[in-house]
Length: 285
Image (spheres, rainbow, N blue to C red):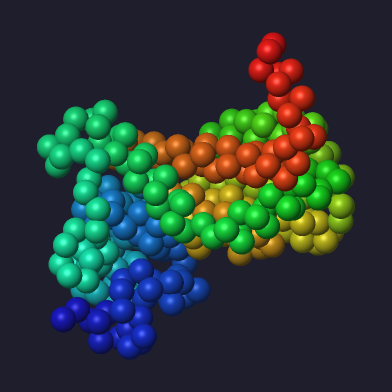
């Protein structure tokens, strides 16, 4: 039995639950490791300490210290706990596999990537509730002004979300950098603004700045993140989670794209008659 097993409270029956229960004790770098393990367990269970460090944007020494902070002798013991949780999560009560893989174990890189995207969509759908999605759609529909914040690769999805909203005659502004114009848009946030923050991995300082400013000015906030224990999510009024597991060097954004599409469809469905002519005109262009 590992040291963690004796330290964990009885009600915490898995590594993920144990990590979540002690999350507030960790340093910022250790929190990056914690988030990655909890949200990408099927990957983390089979990664070396160096590989996990790369995925969590930290160092292998941080991964080792994190393992020890949990009460394990080192990373191999933490990894074994992750493997055990992963195996138990993929087996039903009668010992049968809960679902067949999309491809066989001996798959190509293409099949591995497609299989991961397929799993990301399923995991995202399982983790989102109807109430969460309906709440986000209602916030979008009722906002007088919308500001979407996303930097680096998330800037593309911020732009795509703005595009889908524009098709429904809903105007939105984008903040994608710390440049003067972007900061001016943040400066105009007020209580009638909905601030949407798109986050992947460790939250960029601009995202946290935008979220804290929104809270200070009593604006509505929505975080869309691939971390269930996201830094931006801690400050958001509403949070939508998407899975981004990937066998590749970059995180998958397939589920994020699907989530953006789902939000747009939810808005369209609220008043299909009002949007139908506008969408038809767009399709005929």
